[in-house]
Structure formats: C-alpha cells, structure tokens
Image 1: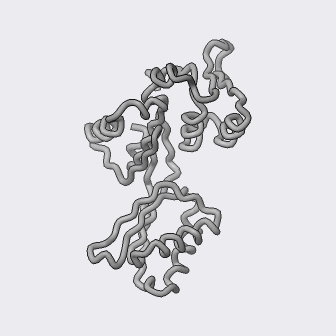
Image 2 (image 1 turned 120 degrees about the vertical axis):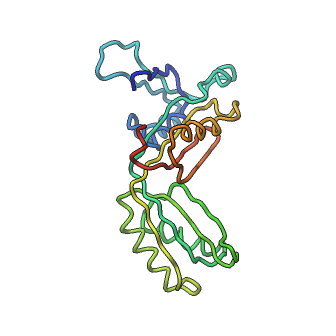
Image 3 (image 1 turned 30 degrees about the horizontal axis):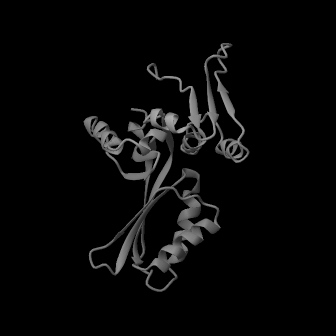
Length: 214
C-alpha cells in the first residue's frame, strides 16, 4: 500500500492478533514466546539497510502510551476462509458441544461462529469458518452427526471464495464507534459482509474474496 505508515512501537496483544489473522510478518508462536518471557522483538525491513525503519514489539505499553496508541494499528487479509452452515440441529447446548468436540478431535481450527435458533426454536442453525484445507475433514465429521438422534434432517452447506479482513489496534479499547466506521467504509464500496467477529482490540469481517484486497 503506497500510503502505509510504519508503526514504531506495538504491544504483544496487537502483534499476536495480527500474526494470527494473516499479516504474514511474524509467526504467532514467535509472539507468544516473546510475550511469555517478556522478550522484545525488533522487526526490520529486509529490503533496506536503514536500521531506523523498524518496529519494536514489547510488553503492554504505559497508561500514557495506551491513550496515544493507534486506534487501528494495522489491517490484515486472510484468503484461506470457508464458511460452513449447519441447519437442523436440536436446539440444545449439548448438540453444540457434540459438534465442536468432534471437529476439535480432527484437529480442525474453527474461527468465527454464529448461532441462531430457527423459527420454531426446536432446531438451530450454526455457521462457522474454517481453513480451506480443512473442508474435506469437516464435511466427513459433520456427515457422521446424521447418525445421532434428532439429526437425521441435518443440512450442511458450504461457501468458498471468501476472505477475512481484520482491523487491529489497542486504541479500540478507548475509542467507541470503530466498528461502525469499518462497516460504513465497506458499505460505501458495496462490499457485502458475510460474518462478523469482534474483540476488545479487533474487528473481523468475512467478505467475498474478490473484494478482499479492495
């Protein structure tokens, strides 16, 4: 991006979120270990000899630094996203537990989860995202659920061609309205949002892959 700006200092939390969300600069395990042992990380530009162009990742910043932290420190794009929708599950917490325990047993990482009861509230619909490479294993796992009581009418749908765009920044904790600005920016460009996930320092939107970079 021609208008990208260098971030001189970043906290472990923001760096870990960005690594996990696909920034492709640091491995998330690298940040986890650095945070555990309070070891600063210096990220430098491998294309330039100028050591002044670097980012220092360190422990949680001071109260003053917290207030001055960028509201959005960075934007990440992850194109490795598939949405899976499951309808016809009995509307019971035990069924949600059963489904995700089976998926976890296959070493499949689930990211964003959306849950909503259907009209009669006897059944529910679950939507969640996974990596593209985990789709075959996930489908096999879900097909086995049809053998359980009250799951014979289970409907499984998948949607590929998606990407996850995330805004990360420690300053989001102090500044309300960031999510609204993000949604407004996407709406102005006619970019549809499939799913949303938020935390104190992150807002993620699943959008069509063709619109990811835009």
